[in-house]
View 1: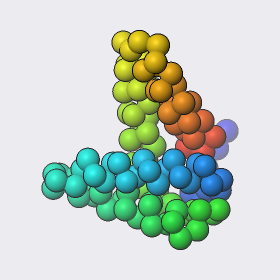
View 2: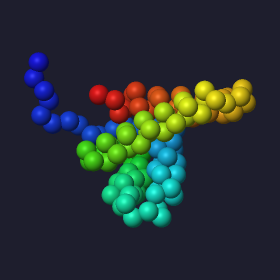
View 3: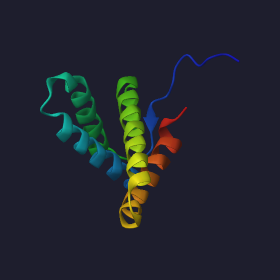
Length: 112
């Protein structure tokens, strides 16, 4: 089977998915703002946020933006899984909705 030469990085997000991604990008920007090592990540997340805010129905990302967003979301999912394992019932209940939202986003849009 031949490998695809070009991939399409155009995504169609509904309003809930767009809100989740924009809040995720804002959170990542706030965490990385003080460290200069994350300058490329910072610019990628700012660009993603701007693109989603301008047109949330059809967003065209670059390969770099897609890779950075996917990796950051995967790391966040792993972190939430660890927190859920060690948490009590109420805390698990709070993390569960965030975990399922990120999982659905990754499975529906960003996993190959």
